Image (cartoon, rainbow, N blue to C red; front, side, top):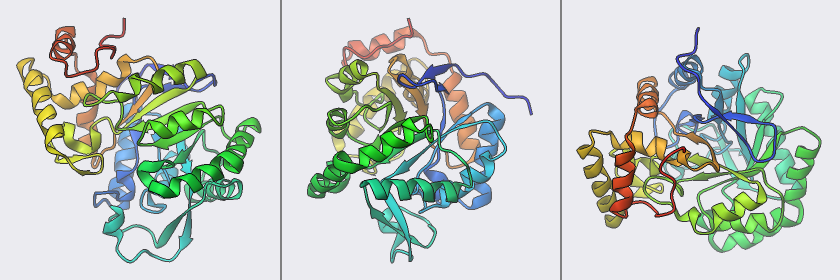
Length: 335
């Protein structure tokens, strides 16, 4: 089937990877916060491939292996770039209450954190088995940081810095993976990681979006100096920018809701769907390699493609800056 449209490409760090500026985040395909069966998930991937999407991001965490299985099955005979993650080992035995993990009908495993050399190597090899693929292009250390672990992060980061990074670097140096990085939800751990190694890319979820641009203050300048690219995960900030009440994986606080209302009012004045602006905004920054929204249905991803290709006038972005709704240093054009 002929692709619906051609996407422009950007490079990952100093690697040879040329990646589409739009990819598919595959957390929903594992049943994270949504009830999707295998056939529904497969339909989304097939539609994405037919539409020209070639970059897909998954992880063992998503449905405790469910996402990996359906993603691998659908990509196996296609051309693609895939990122997946390490840091959790899936061990046999179902969790008692999947909803506590934000899961709907996960596979009968439970995750155990392990950021050591052995843990990362095992997680990587187990992931290949679940995917049924012979390679992973981009390997990311998943959910390291205080946001996820609190006080326990000191121990986990020690494991990563003392032995875990060696595993990541070894896999890259041996051309087993093409790029390494983190897949996280916070700026600080990325800054910490830059002190212990040479990373190609950080998949940063929810921190550089239309709603917030905190990485501009410190993280992005240091990433630029280090040659580290950024993949923008969670461009809708867990859904609050598409009309849902979720922000950062929880109920949106009042100040966030009020800011979204202000953004939406200006978008309506320009007759622009706010989600279209949310998808396009991150890519004005050249450090962003790709934006990877998730989709819960084929029709939802079809809508995402329409938002992504919508023409948005420069005056809209200038108005957001004038109203101080976006960071004064945030790029608002590709020129």
